[in-house]
Length: 358
Length: 127
Image (tube, rainbow over all chains, first blue to last red; front, side, top):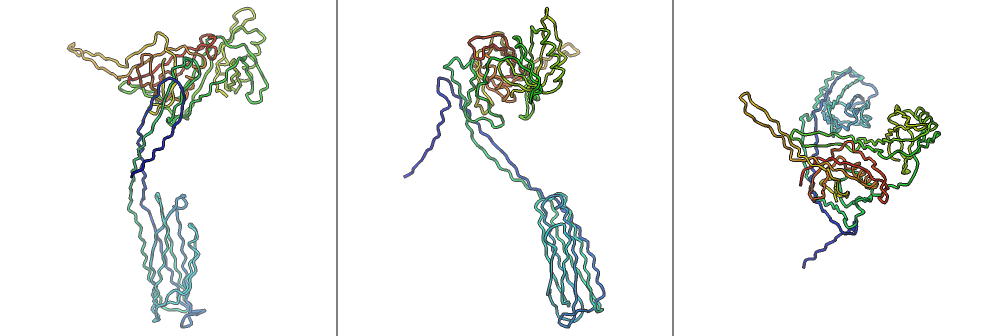
Protein backbone atom coordinates (compact mmCIF):
# COMPACT_ATOMS: atom_id res chain seq x y z
CA UNK A 1 0.00 0.00 0.00
CA UNK A 2 1.34 3.35 -0.92
CA UNK A 3 0.60 6.38 1.14
CA UNK A 4 0.82 9.79 -0.40
CA UNK A 5 0.74 12.90 1.71
CA UNK A 6 0.04 16.23 0.16
CA UNK A 7 0.52 19.47 2.01
CA UNK A 8 -0.80 22.69 0.62
CA UNK A 9 -0.31 26.20 1.87
CA UNK A 10 -3.09 28.61 1.13
CA UNK A 11 -2.78 32.37 1.39
CA UNK A 12 -5.70 34.67 0.87
CA UNK A 13 -4.43 37.75 -0.85
CA UNK A 14 -7.70 39.57 -1.15
CA UNK A 15 -11.35 38.98 -1.78
CA UNK A 16 -13.34 40.38 -4.65
CA UNK A 17 -14.19 40.07 -8.29
CA UNK A 18 -11.21 40.43 -10.51
CA UNK A 19 -8.59 38.48 -12.26
CA UNK A 20 -5.57 36.55 -11.16
CA UNK A 21 -2.49 36.04 -13.18
CA UNK A 22 -0.05 33.34 -12.25
CA UNK A 23 3.37 33.61 -13.70
CA UNK A 24 5.75 30.73 -13.57
CA UNK A 25 9.34 31.48 -14.12
CA UNK A 26 12.00 28.89 -14.57
CA UNK A 27 15.22 30.33 -13.40
CA UNK A 28 18.55 28.80 -14.15
CA UNK A 29 21.48 29.78 -12.05
CA UNK A 30 24.88 28.79 -13.23
CA UNK A 31 27.66 29.01 -10.73
CA UNK A 32 31.24 28.27 -11.41
CA UNK A 33 33.94 27.86 -8.86
CA UNK A 34 37.46 28.15 -10.08
CA UNK A 35 40.50 27.32 -8.10
CA UNK A 36 43.77 28.36 -9.54
CA UNK A 37 47.16 27.27 -8.43
CA UNK A 38 49.82 29.54 -9.77
CA UNK A 39 53.45 28.67 -10.15
CA UNK A 40 55.49 29.19 -7.06
CA UNK A 41 58.91 30.67 -7.01
CA UNK A 42 61.05 29.09 -4.40
CA UNK A 43 64.65 29.99 -3.87
CA UNK A 44 67.02 28.25 -1.55
CA UNK A 45 70.36 29.51 -0.45
CA UNK A 46 72.67 27.24 1.37
CA UNK A 47 75.95 27.98 2.99
CA UNK A 48 78.07 25.62 4.92
CA UNK A 49 80.65 26.76 7.29
CA UNK A 50 82.43 23.80 8.68
CA UNK A 51 84.87 24.99 11.22
CA UNK A 52 87.89 23.23 12.46
CA UNK A 53 86.80 20.35 14.63
CA UNK A 54 87.92 20.53 18.17
CA UNK A 55 86.85 18.68 21.23
CA UNK A 56 85.75 20.26 24.45
CA UNK A 57 83.07 19.48 26.94
CA UNK A 58 83.05 16.03 25.46
CA UNK A 59 80.09 13.88 26.23
CA UNK A 60 80.00 11.30 23.51
CA UNK A 61 80.85 7.66 23.74
CA UNK A 62 84.47 8.54 23.62
CA UNK A 63 84.19 11.53 25.83
CA UNK A 64 83.88 13.98 23.03
CA UNK A 65 81.18 16.46 22.34
CA UNK A 66 80.56 17.83 18.99
CA UNK A 67 77.93 20.39 18.55
CA UNK A 68 76.17 21.25 15.39
CA UNK A 69 74.28 24.41 15.14
CA UNK A 70 71.84 24.96 12.39
CA UNK A 71 70.37 28.33 11.77
CA UNK A 72 67.39 28.44 9.53
CA UNK A 73 65.72 31.56 8.33
CA UNK A 74 62.50 31.02 6.50
CA UNK A 75 60.91 34.04 4.98
CA UNK A 76 57.39 33.47 3.87
CA UNK A 77 56.43 36.33 1.61
CA UNK A 78 53.13 34.76 0.88
CA UNK A 79 52.14 35.19 4.45
CA UNK A 80 52.96 38.86 4.31
CA UNK A 81 50.51 39.17 1.46
CA UNK A 82 47.86 38.03 3.79
CA UNK A 83 47.37 34.71 2.12
CA UNK A 84 47.70 31.42 3.73
CA UNK A 85 50.71 29.60 2.41
CA UNK A 86 52.17 26.17 2.48
CA UNK A 87 55.83 25.69 1.92
CA UNK A 88 56.73 22.22 0.98
CA UNK A 89 60.35 21.48 1.66
CA UNK A 90 61.93 18.17 2.46
CA UNK A 91 65.58 17.76 2.57
CA UNK A 92 67.99 15.17 3.68
CA UNK A 93 71.20 16.07 5.27
CA UNK A 94 74.04 13.63 5.42
CA UNK A 95 77.02 14.52 7.50
CA UNK A 96 79.78 12.08 7.19
CA UNK A 97 82.81 12.44 9.27
CA UNK A 98 85.45 9.83 8.85
CA UNK A 99 86.24 9.21 12.45
CA UNK A 100 85.79 5.51 12.32
CA UNK A 101 82.97 5.52 14.76
CA UNK A 102 79.70 3.81 14.38
CA UNK A 103 76.80 5.76 13.07
CA UNK A 104 74.78 7.55 15.65
CA UNK A 105 71.70 9.50 15.50
CA UNK A 106 70.38 12.60 17.11
CA UNK A 107 70.55 12.52 20.82
CA UNK A 108 69.16 15.92 21.49
CA UNK A 109 67.57 18.64 19.49
CA UNK A 110 65.73 21.77 20.19
CA UNK A 111 63.51 23.50 17.79
CA UNK A 112 62.25 27.00 18.06
CA UNK A 113 61.56 27.54 14.46
CA UNK A 114 58.15 26.41 13.54
CA UNK A 115 56.03 28.46 15.82
CA UNK A 116 55.05 31.08 13.29
CA UNK A 117 56.00 32.20 9.86
CA UNK A 118 58.33 35.08 9.29
CA UNK A 119 60.36 34.20 12.30
CA UNK A 120 63.94 33.30 12.32
CA UNK A 121 64.56 30.26 14.39
CA UNK A 122 67.54 28.49 15.73
CA UNK A 123 67.69 24.79 15.37
CA UNK A 124 70.27 23.26 17.58
CA UNK A 125 71.26 19.67 17.18
CA UNK A 126 73.77 18.02 19.38
CA UNK A 127 75.01 14.87 17.84
CA UNK A 128 77.55 12.28 18.41
CA UNK A 129 79.02 12.36 15.04
CA UNK A 130 80.21 9.58 12.95
CA UNK A 131 78.34 8.68 9.85
CA UNK A 132 75.40 10.72 10.69
CA UNK A 133 72.26 10.92 8.76
CA UNK A 134 69.73 13.42 9.89
CA UNK A 135 66.50 13.90 8.14
CA UNK A 136 64.54 16.98 8.77
CA UNK A 137 61.21 17.55 7.29
CA UNK A 138 59.14 20.58 7.64
CA UNK A 139 56.09 21.53 5.77
CA UNK A 140 54.06 24.55 5.15
CA UNK A 141 50.99 24.39 3.02
CA UNK A 142 49.97 26.84 0.36
CA UNK A 143 46.25 26.86 -0.15
CA UNK A 144 46.10 29.58 -2.69
CA UNK A 145 48.97 31.74 -3.73
CA UNK A 146 49.58 34.38 -6.28
CA UNK A 147 53.19 34.97 -7.19
CA UNK A 148 54.36 33.46 -3.98
CA UNK A 149 58.03 33.46 -3.24
CA UNK A 150 59.47 31.29 -0.56
CA UNK A 151 63.06 31.68 0.39
CA UNK A 152 65.11 29.60 2.71
CA UNK A 153 68.59 30.39 3.85
CA UNK A 154 70.44 27.62 5.49
CA UNK A 155 73.64 27.91 7.40
CA UNK A 156 75.42 25.23 9.22
CA UNK A 157 78.27 25.72 11.53
CA UNK A 158 80.13 22.69 12.66
CA UNK A 159 82.42 23.28 15.53
CA UNK A 160 84.89 20.70 16.64
CA UNK A 161 86.96 21.43 19.60
CA UNK A 162 89.63 19.15 18.34
CA UNK A 163 90.86 19.27 14.85
CA UNK A 164 89.86 16.54 12.56
CA UNK A 165 89.30 16.35 8.92
CA UNK A 166 85.70 17.04 8.46
CA UNK A 167 83.72 16.21 5.43
CA UNK A 168 80.23 17.48 5.24
CA UNK A 169 77.98 16.50 2.47
CA UNK A 170 74.67 18.11 2.05
CA UNK A 171 72.04 16.76 -0.17
CA UNK A 172 69.24 19.11 -0.47
CA UNK A 173 66.15 18.22 -2.33
CA UNK A 174 63.50 20.81 -2.77
CA UNK A 175 60.48 19.77 -4.69
CA UNK A 176 57.99 22.34 -5.72
CA UNK A 177 54.99 21.61 -7.81
CA UNK A 178 55.15 24.58 -10.05
CA UNK A 179 52.74 23.41 -12.70
CA UNK A 180 49.77 25.68 -12.77
CA UNK A 181 46.52 23.95 -12.60
CA UNK A 182 43.12 25.37 -13.16
CA UNK A 183 39.94 23.58 -12.84
CA UNK A 184 36.44 24.74 -12.59
CA UNK A 185 33.30 23.29 -11.28
CA UNK A 186 30.09 24.15 -12.93
CA UNK A 187 26.86 23.70 -11.14
CA UNK A 188 23.49 24.32 -12.60
CA UNK A 189 20.54 24.92 -10.41
CA UNK A 190 17.10 25.19 -11.72
CA UNK A 191 14.10 26.28 -9.79
CA UNK A 192 10.55 26.93 -10.73
CA UNK A 193 9.08 30.02 -9.14
CA UNK A 194 5.51 31.05 -9.12
CA UNK A 195 4.34 34.62 -8.92
CA UNK A 196 0.84 35.79 -8.46
CA UNK A 197 -0.58 39.06 -9.64
CA UNK A 198 -4.17 39.98 -9.10
CA UNK A 199 -6.52 42.87 -9.50
CA UNK A 200 -10.01 43.37 -8.23
CA UNK A 201 -12.19 45.13 -10.68
CA UNK A 202 -15.53 45.03 -8.93
CA UNK A 203 -14.95 48.27 -7.08
CA UNK A 204 -14.57 51.24 -9.38
CA UNK A 205 -12.74 53.14 -6.66
CA UNK A 206 -9.62 51.19 -7.52
CA UNK A 207 -9.12 53.62 -10.39
CA UNK A 208 -8.92 56.55 -8.00
CA UNK A 209 -7.75 55.23 -4.66
CA UNK A 210 -4.22 54.52 -3.64
CA UNK A 211 -4.61 50.79 -4.06
CA UNK A 212 -1.67 48.81 -5.42
CA UNK A 213 -2.30 45.10 -5.66
CA UNK A 214 0.60 43.18 -4.27
CA UNK A 215 0.55 39.47 -4.94
CA UNK A 216 3.14 36.91 -4.04
CA UNK A 217 6.58 36.21 -5.30
CA UNK A 218 8.36 39.01 -7.00
CA UNK A 219 11.88 39.84 -7.89
CA UNK A 220 14.16 40.45 -4.90
CA UNK A 221 16.14 42.89 -7.02
CA UNK A 222 13.38 45.41 -6.46
CA UNK A 223 12.36 46.86 -3.17
CA UNK A 224 8.84 46.46 -1.94
CA UNK A 225 6.25 48.93 -3.01
CA UNK A 226 4.68 51.02 -0.30
CA UNK A 227 1.10 49.83 0.06
CA UNK A 228 0.14 52.35 2.73
CA UNK A 229 -1.53 55.42 1.29
CA UNK A 230 0.19 58.65 2.27
CA UNK A 231 -1.68 60.77 4.73
CA UNK A 232 -2.75 64.04 3.21
CA UNK A 233 -4.32 66.89 5.09
CA UNK A 234 -4.79 70.56 4.51
CA UNK A 235 -1.81 72.66 5.37
CA UNK A 236 0.04 75.81 4.50
CA UNK A 237 3.30 76.02 2.65
CA UNK A 238 5.96 76.56 5.30
CA UNK A 239 9.68 76.85 4.76
CA UNK A 240 12.09 76.35 7.63
CA UNK A 241 15.79 76.86 7.91
CA UNK A 242 17.99 75.13 8.88
CA UNK A 243 16.30 71.81 8.47
CA UNK A 244 17.53 70.51 11.81
CA UNK A 245 16.64 72.79 14.69
CA UNK A 246 15.13 75.51 12.51
CA UNK A 247 15.53 79.09 13.56
CA UNK A 248 13.81 80.75 10.62
CA UNK A 249 10.28 79.98 9.55
CA UNK A 250 8.57 81.41 6.51
CA UNK A 251 4.88 80.81 5.96
CA UNK A 252 3.65 81.44 2.43
CA UNK A 253 0.50 81.09 0.48
CA UNK A 254 -0.08 77.76 -1.11
CA UNK A 255 1.09 77.50 -4.71
CA UNK A 256 -1.22 78.03 -7.62
CA UNK A 257 -2.68 75.10 -9.49
CA UNK A 258 -0.41 73.82 -12.19
CA UNK A 259 2.38 72.95 -9.80
CA UNK A 260 4.52 70.14 -11.11
CA UNK A 261 6.42 67.36 -9.47
CA UNK A 262 9.17 65.92 -11.62
CA UNK A 263 10.71 62.55 -10.90
CA UNK A 264 14.08 62.10 -12.55
CA UNK A 265 15.81 58.78 -12.54
CA UNK A 266 19.41 57.87 -13.11
CA UNK A 267 19.28 55.30 -15.82
CA UNK A 268 21.08 54.35 -18.98
CA UNK A 269 18.64 54.62 -21.81
CA UNK A 270 19.80 53.47 -25.21
CA UNK A 271 18.35 52.52 -28.51
CA UNK A 272 19.72 49.40 -30.11
CA UNK A 273 20.73 49.16 -33.75
CA UNK A 274 17.44 47.50 -34.42
CA UNK A 275 15.55 50.36 -32.83
CA UNK A 276 14.61 48.75 -29.53
CA UNK A 277 14.66 50.91 -26.46
CA UNK A 278 16.54 49.41 -23.59
CA UNK A 279 16.96 50.75 -20.10
CA UNK A 280 19.39 49.77 -17.39
CA UNK A 281 19.83 51.13 -13.92
CA UNK A 282 21.14 50.09 -10.59
CA UNK A 283 19.01 50.27 -7.53
CA UNK A 284 21.58 52.37 -5.75
CA UNK A 285 21.65 55.07 -8.41
CA UNK A 286 20.03 58.24 -7.18
CA UNK A 287 16.68 59.58 -8.18
CA UNK A 288 15.54 63.15 -7.67
CA UNK A 289 12.21 64.78 -7.29
CA UNK A 290 11.85 68.43 -8.09
CA UNK A 291 8.84 70.53 -7.14
CA UNK A 292 8.02 73.54 -9.25
CA UNK A 293 5.73 75.85 -7.34
CA UNK A 294 4.36 79.19 -8.46
CA UNK A 295 3.29 81.35 -5.56
CA UNK A 296 1.21 84.35 -6.42
CA UNK A 297 -0.45 87.29 -4.76
CA UNK A 298 2.16 87.91 -2.12
CA UNK A 299 2.36 91.28 -0.48
CA UNK A 300 5.56 93.29 -0.39
CA UNK A 301 6.30 92.47 3.23
CA UNK A 302 6.18 88.76 2.54
CA UNK A 303 8.25 89.03 -0.59
CA UNK A 304 10.99 90.77 1.41
CA UNK A 305 10.89 87.86 3.83
CA UNK A 306 11.19 85.46 0.89
CA UNK A 307 14.30 87.25 -0.36
CA UNK A 308 15.83 87.21 3.11
CA UNK A 309 15.05 83.53 3.47
CA UNK A 310 16.54 82.61 0.10
CA UNK A 311 19.69 84.57 0.86
CA UNK A 312 20.10 82.97 4.26
CA UNK A 313 19.52 79.41 3.07
CA UNK A 314 21.40 79.66 -0.20
CA UNK A 315 22.55 76.16 -1.09
CA UNK A 316 21.69 74.76 2.30
CA UNK A 317 19.21 72.15 3.34
CA UNK A 318 15.86 73.53 4.32
CA UNK A 319 12.55 72.05 5.35
CA UNK A 320 9.39 72.37 3.33
CA UNK A 321 6.02 71.54 4.80
CA UNK A 322 3.70 71.45 1.83
CA UNK A 323 0.00 72.19 1.52
CA UNK A 324 -0.75 68.51 2.06
CA UNK A 325 1.11 68.56 5.39
CA UNK A 326 3.93 66.45 4.05
CA UNK A 327 7.41 67.28 5.26
CA UNK A 328 10.20 67.55 2.71
CA UNK A 329 13.86 68.31 3.07
CA UNK A 330 16.01 69.65 0.31
CA UNK A 331 17.53 72.62 -1.41
CA UNK A 332 16.10 75.53 -3.33
CA UNK A 333 17.35 75.02 -6.86
CA UNK A 334 16.70 78.41 -8.40
CA UNK A 335 17.39 81.14 -5.86
CA UNK A 336 17.81 83.57 -8.75
CA UNK A 337 14.14 83.24 -9.59
CA UNK A 338 12.44 86.39 -10.78
CA UNK A 339 10.12 88.10 -8.39
CA UNK A 340 7.44 89.67 -10.51
CA UNK A 341 5.17 92.44 -9.41
CA UNK A 342 1.80 91.62 -10.92
CA UNK A 343 -0.12 94.46 -9.39
CA UNK A 344 -0.24 96.94 -6.60
CA UNK A 345 1.24 95.18 -3.60
CA UNK A 346 0.97 91.89 -5.43
CA UNK A 347 3.95 89.77 -6.25
CA UNK A 348 4.66 86.28 -7.48
CA UNK A 349 7.67 84.07 -7.75
CA UNK A 350 8.55 80.50 -8.65
CA UNK A 351 10.04 78.18 -6.09
CA UNK A 352 12.03 75.26 -7.51
CA UNK A 353 12.74 72.79 -4.77
CA UNK A 354 14.76 69.59 -5.03
CA UNK A 355 14.05 67.41 -2.05
CA UNK A 356 12.94 64.17 -0.65
CA UNK A 357 10.04 63.21 1.49
CA UNK A 358 10.85 62.72 5.11
CA UNK B 1 -9.46 50.31 -17.15
CA UNK B 2 -5.74 50.00 -17.74
CA UNK B 3 -3.53 47.87 -15.61
CA UNK B 4 0.23 47.77 -15.37
CA UNK B 5 2.05 44.90 -13.76
CA UNK B 6 5.68 44.57 -12.83
CA UNK B 7 8.40 43.42 -12.66
CA UNK B 8 8.47 41.20 -15.69
CA UNK B 9 8.71 38.22 -15.70
CA UNK B 10 8.18 37.82 -11.99
CA UNK B 11 5.02 39.88 -11.91
CA UNK B 12 3.56 40.42 -8.52
CA UNK B 13 2.49 44.05 -8.27
CA UNK B 14 -0.40 45.50 -10.24
CA UNK B 15 -1.51 49.09 -10.55
CA UNK B 16 -4.91 49.85 -11.96
CA UNK B 17 -5.41 53.12 -13.81
CA UNK B 18 -8.46 54.62 -15.43
CA UNK B 19 -8.64 54.67 -19.18
CA UNK B 20 -6.41 57.18 -20.87
CA UNK B 21 -7.73 60.41 -22.25
CA UNK B 22 -8.42 60.80 -25.92
CA UNK B 23 -5.38 61.78 -27.96
CA UNK B 24 -3.55 58.68 -26.84
CA UNK B 25 -1.24 57.51 -29.58
CA UNK B 26 0.52 54.47 -30.86
CA UNK B 27 3.45 54.72 -33.27
CA UNK B 28 5.41 51.92 -34.83
CA UNK B 29 9.04 51.99 -33.93
CA UNK B 30 10.38 51.69 -37.45
CA UNK B 31 11.98 53.81 -40.12
CA UNK B 32 12.70 53.73 -43.82
CA UNK B 33 15.81 55.10 -45.44
CA UNK B 34 15.42 55.56 -49.18
CA UNK B 35 18.48 55.81 -51.40
CA UNK B 36 18.94 56.24 -55.15
CA UNK B 37 21.76 54.88 -57.21
CA UNK B 38 23.67 56.85 -59.85
CA UNK B 39 21.42 55.33 -62.48
CA UNK B 40 18.31 56.48 -60.71
CA UNK B 41 17.22 53.13 -59.30
CA UNK B 42 15.68 53.33 -55.89
CA UNK B 43 16.34 51.07 -52.98
CA UNK B 44 15.46 51.37 -49.37
CA UNK B 45 16.62 50.26 -45.98
CA UNK B 46 14.02 49.43 -43.40
CA UNK B 47 14.64 49.45 -39.69
CA UNK B 48 11.87 47.74 -37.83
CA UNK B 49 12.16 46.97 -34.17
CA UNK B 50 8.79 45.31 -33.96
CA UNK B 51 7.86 47.53 -31.08
CA UNK B 52 5.67 50.58 -30.72
CA UNK B 53 5.71 53.76 -28.78
CA UNK B 54 2.63 54.25 -26.70
CA UNK B 55 1.65 57.61 -25.34
CA UNK B 56 -1.04 57.53 -22.71
CA UNK B 57 -2.28 60.76 -21.15
CA UNK B 58 -4.22 60.35 -17.94
CA UNK B 59 -6.19 62.47 -15.58
CA UNK B 60 -5.71 60.84 -12.22
CA UNK B 61 -6.83 61.54 -8.74
CA UNK B 62 -4.15 62.81 -6.44
CA UNK B 63 -3.94 59.51 -4.58
CA UNK B 64 -3.79 57.47 -7.77
CA UNK B 65 -1.02 59.75 -9.03
CA UNK B 66 0.89 59.10 -5.83
CA UNK B 67 0.41 55.37 -6.33
CA UNK B 68 1.66 55.61 -9.90
CA UNK B 69 4.65 57.63 -8.76
CA UNK B 70 5.45 54.99 -6.16
CA UNK B 71 5.10 52.29 -8.79
CA UNK B 72 7.47 54.13 -11.10
CA UNK B 73 9.90 54.85 -8.29
CA UNK B 74 10.30 51.14 -7.65
CA UNK B 75 9.88 49.69 -11.14
CA UNK B 76 11.16 52.36 -13.50
CA UNK B 77 14.01 50.07 -14.54
CA UNK B 78 11.83 47.01 -14.97
CA UNK B 79 9.70 45.80 -17.81
CA UNK B 80 5.99 46.07 -17.34
CA UNK B 81 3.03 44.17 -18.69
CA UNK B 82 0.44 46.73 -19.67
CA UNK B 83 -3.15 45.80 -20.38
CA UNK B 84 -4.88 48.57 -22.30
CA UNK B 85 -8.55 49.44 -22.45
CA UNK B 86 -9.00 47.20 -25.50
CA UNK B 87 -7.60 44.26 -23.54
CA UNK B 88 -4.41 44.22 -25.60
CA UNK B 89 -1.33 43.26 -23.63
CA UNK B 90 2.02 44.88 -24.11
CA UNK B 91 5.47 44.28 -22.76
CA UNK B 92 6.60 47.79 -22.06
CA UNK B 93 9.52 49.89 -20.92
CA UNK B 94 9.02 53.35 -19.47
CA UNK B 95 10.38 56.10 -21.68
CA UNK B 96 9.16 59.13 -19.76
CA UNK B 97 12.23 60.66 -18.23
CA UNK B 98 11.67 62.76 -16.30
CA UNK B 99 8.26 61.70 -15.22
CA UNK B 100 6.11 64.67 -14.27
CA UNK B 101 2.79 65.09 -12.57
CA UNK B 102 0.98 68.34 -13.10
CA UNK B 103 -1.85 69.37 -10.84
CA UNK B 104 -4.72 70.29 -13.11
CA UNK B 105 -7.26 71.52 -10.62
CA UNK B 106 -9.44 70.78 -7.70
CA UNK B 107 -11.49 67.58 -7.84
CA UNK B 108 -13.97 67.42 -5.06
CA UNK B 109 -14.84 63.91 -4.09
CA UNK B 110 -11.74 62.38 -5.61
CA UNK B 111 -9.22 60.87 -3.24
CA UNK B 112 -6.74 63.62 -2.52
CA UNK B 113 -9.09 66.32 -3.74
CA UNK B 114 -7.09 67.18 -6.82
CA UNK B 115 -6.90 66.10 -10.43
CA UNK B 116 -3.45 65.45 -11.78
CA UNK B 117 -2.28 65.24 -15.37
CA UNK B 118 0.14 62.44 -16.09
CA UNK B 119 1.46 61.21 -19.40
CA UNK B 120 3.07 57.82 -19.74
CA UNK B 121 5.33 57.18 -22.69
CA UNK B 122 6.18 53.56 -23.22
CA UNK B 123 8.23 51.54 -25.62
CA UNK B 124 6.10 48.46 -25.95
CA UNK B 125 5.84 45.24 -27.81
CA UNK B 126 2.57 43.44 -28.13
CA UNK B 127 2.42 40.08 -26.48
